[in-house]
Length: 195
Length: 205
Image 1 (cartoon, rainbow over the protein chains, first blue to last red):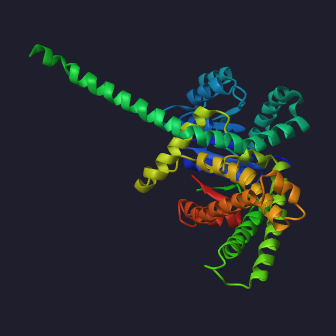
Image 2 (image 1 turned 90 degrees about the vertical axis):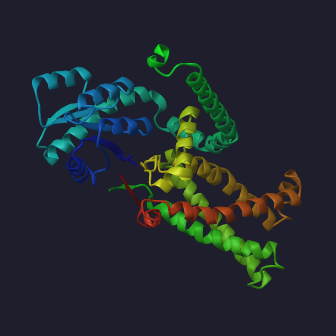
């Protein structure tokens, strides 16, 4: 069974995400949109994706900066740059970051689908190399092993949680007390020294 | 809102058969255990219903198990191996359920194909589905025919031990039957998760 490929589209314009959804939605891709670079990085920290599309011009973090951060933590993840403001400088910067593609708006369905396939092919090579002999039965055993271990790891988390919670409360209390101590002992502004 | 296909058909079929079966098992179980308080059906009918529904759910469970074992969806039941990440996300989720939800804060968990459960649900369902439900079925099977399974019953410390485990889990599942629909009603609309378990599609931001 072929797994659904997850595509993250980063664009402050929701129409772009919807276009990707329309083109890729029924073709074995799950398209998830992020309206900003920060939201995208937050999603990537929590979930795995197969391809990322990033718009260059966005408020806050631009697409190239997002790509840089993605490549720093997940160099294997293919990122395709999308822009309505293509320039040689941007293309050169993107190429240096090792992007899987550079698309100029307006996008056509063929451009979207073709770039996704191309990006996934690029990803498949290192992934296969990384997996090595782990495909097939080994992967099955690993999956089942994790499945069987899950409730025991879960129970360990449940047992440990009150201690973690108490530790956290203690830490917050110490931090609050230390902060209060600083407020009381130290003058709050240079003016108070003058007086 | 986008739609994500997170509940495949076999899981939905299993879920609703399981839900109906658990309600029957709980009702017949209450009558079997507390016959003096709750008496609806004739006793032999209640015993037969409890046994047959129990066997049906055991078969249903194995269908669920085979589906997960032989598809990539098994990842849904994989544990979080990074404790720091697990506890951080758990605290965020607890903060949401305990406080943020009443202020209209967004849910910190975003449903995705392989992460349909939030950290609290994830641990709960791993323990329930891979540990507690099989124990409940197994103890039920032992109690079904004490003569045939006499050796196993003795191995676990006798009928009293097996019965206590079965009844304790039965009490737990009664609580679950109340908590589960309540938590299921906490989607972006009260019916969103119920619809998702019928259609397979969860609506995500």
